[in-house]
Image 1 (tube, rainbow, N blue to C red):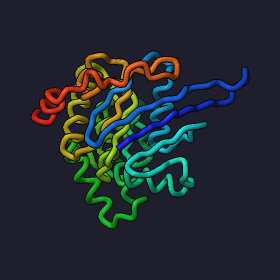
Image 2: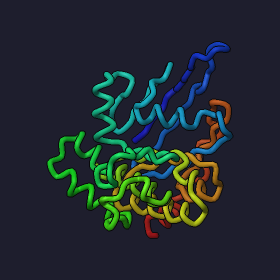
Image 3: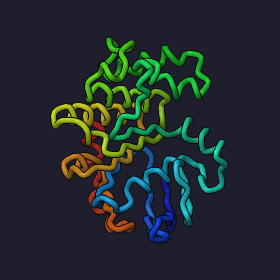
Length: 236
């Protein structure tokens, strides 16, 4: 589902070019749940942005869901994201002037779905917010805003879910509820999950844990990935 070969990313700065990613090789199969851990500044979010087609690498190849992203135009990348990828950020990224229903309907409308609002309502029902359709983000708690973001990410039935510290702005109990819901939705939809986290316990819930340090993958988690772990997650 995801394959990175010799991936590099160099970005300009006032002090000169900075090499963020340094020759990454990584493969993630369909339906896998993979956590990405490492210290701040190690390149985790940059790698996720490249996988989602939001950032172009300096060198190397990126294949996601059968698409070679380096060969695609900006318009083609937008279609790729719309059809294949759901993204959840730490800061929710909801439009404050739109209701929960309107926020979730956005990607469906971009996809040209005539039933966008019906599908959005169904998605909000799945995350327990069927009674909050007409509420604006400012009227929702942090947990409700993140559940709305989850509903939006899953509304189009993405093959891949990218989650960047999705519980970073939530208290412990609310964060656990959101994560339980995230794994439940991934299991139901069969989505491949790439989860960036600083929480060791959360990382351990995934089939594999990839460790990224100073732009290098120091452990791709293959040795940790056992059939019993994946089977237990699917059975749960």
